Image (cartoon, rainbow, N blue to C red; front, top):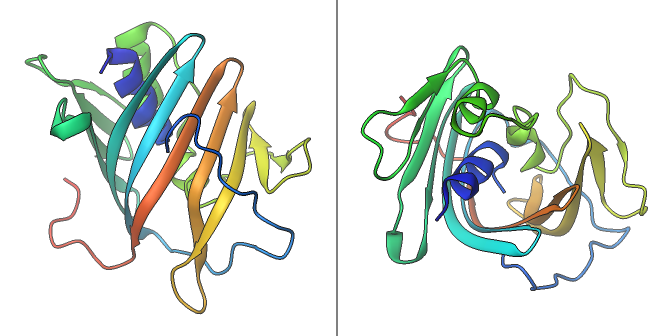
Length: 196
């Protein structure tokens, strides 16, 4: 897994490239609110230009604190990003010291020399735009929204309970970057070990 893939997946939280999900119909819709404490497990694929990669994602969110582990096939890689307001750290395989910064964008800037506006990812994976930034419906008219130049398409929903429906398949697009996230499991149970 390349450094770029780990960083983009961490910061976007983005599935299998080439797998087409049936579109969400007009009758299907998000219901309820997952709150601030949840976790998800899924598979992400990223395609940029001619390159593509896949990874597994384990994301725990508790309030404003988070821990995200991205690994390749058979658990290879094990890159990890965690933090909360004011401090984010990124540990990459083969690197002795983690990269740290006040937010995911600053860590990405350190590693790559550029960054994406991605602090809203915890809203995006639940199928909702970040509330503090302008957004608009997708120009294609499909389920989802556009925010910060990104198109966030909701391809499939799953019922978590009678009152809660969340995405199980999402598509993120920006310029020539396409990220597909397939969420295999959502949990709203409090984690035994909160993100550090």
